[in-house]
Image 1: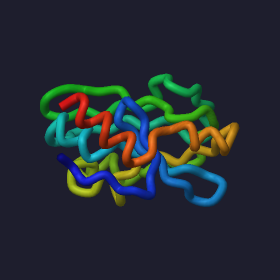
Image 2 (image 1 turned 135 degrees about the vertical axis):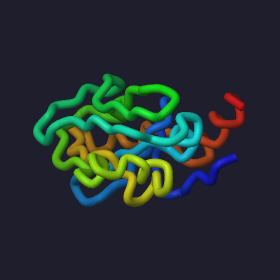
Image 3 (image 1 turned 60 degrees about the vertical axis):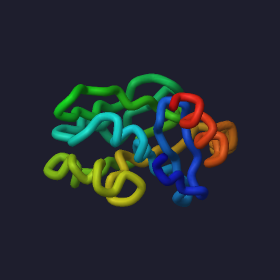
Length: 129
């Protein structure tokens, strides 16, 4: 089983969220990148885009398939990880670090507490397993 950082929150669709000041950093989990294989392309939302919770907001494409990334919370995209355009494989090598996708300013900052904690996410992985 992949290592699940304890300081993040998670979605059932395998996105992670890290608090960073007023914004949240969003990425895909190690489990998600492992299932997809070698990443070859990433399509990110534009800064200023308003996201609705649970709606498609980005696409990650691997040698195997393309997969949608879903907004973990409602809010506004404040920044995207431009480095991924030239180095999508960073999602494979560092999914919880340099492989982040975008930053989100949530409409309701407390909503992050409704996401899965590390223990709940590990239970989800075990049940899928």
